[in-house]
Length: 208
Image (cartoon, rainbow, N blue to C red):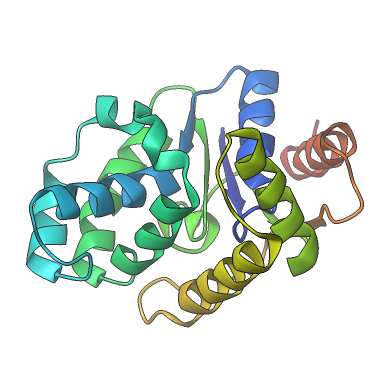
């Protein structure tokens, strides 16, 4: 069983994907970490983040263990990821990795921005998770505060709006709901309510 969870930054899709994976006993991949790791490695190579050649080299040499780097969870890493994600060669290189993960025996849960549209268009269930921009900004602000990062709600809101625009307007695999995806707005839901709603949507899709 392959479950695709898509949506914009701070919509709650990552937390939902992990809970859903645990519920069905499936492996889970946060595909955004792949792009964050590529951006990090491009910088380590001494190149600009938007350098296509360096980004492609980084994508082709990516190792799963490198995704455990806690620095990949910062807002700066997320913003950098949306820059390398606009490079078609990078998306092509990482597509192989993602599809291999999705088609392992038993299936998997993947979350990202183009899982249901490009990576796994034939997924058994697809959910597009969203929330109002201001709600997402507040969630991300509280996360950063919890890690002791000096951020402002205004700065976070501007970053999220910039990322949304960048992700939705890129020429290669833009962020959008798949035509057959179920929409889940988590603006007014806590994690338990969102999880229950997501499980209900998936069960209806797979006939449970």
